[in-house]
Amino acid sequence: MINHLKKANAFWSYQVDAIKDVPDDILVELVMLHLDLDDIDKLFDIYPFKFIKKAWIENVVVLGDRHYELNKFLAWYYFGMKKPGAYVKSMETRVLNKRMVA
Image 1 (cartoon, helix red, strand yellow):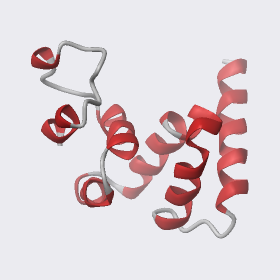
Image 2 (cartoon, rainbow, N blue to C red; image 1 turned 120 degrees about the vertical axis):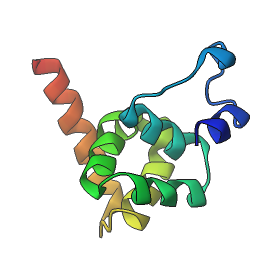
Image 3 (cartoon, rainbow, N blue to C red; image 1 turned 90 degrees about the horizontal axis):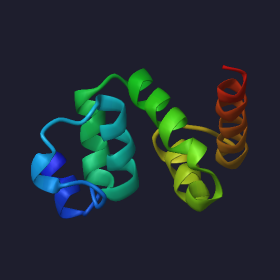
Image 4 (cartoon, rainbow, N blue to C red; image 1 turned 180 degrees about the vertical axis):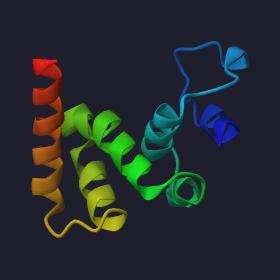
């Protein structure tokens, strides 16, 4: 998957040849932001559902309005939310508030 991310220019601000390992939560984030549904599906073969959902909420949902439509789709398609827009907004608010307190 890292090679797919390199081809998608997901590491635009890094020396690509130096990238050997990516933390799992960051890998989930980058795949969801830069790759297609087939690659996102592969995440669910590699990682537990709860891990992917947590990484998505903490790393992608908090990116805000710029990725709102993507997050609504992910909430509906992968995480089964009946009101994906409301879910995304509430999770964004929850995580950001938690970060402000910490």
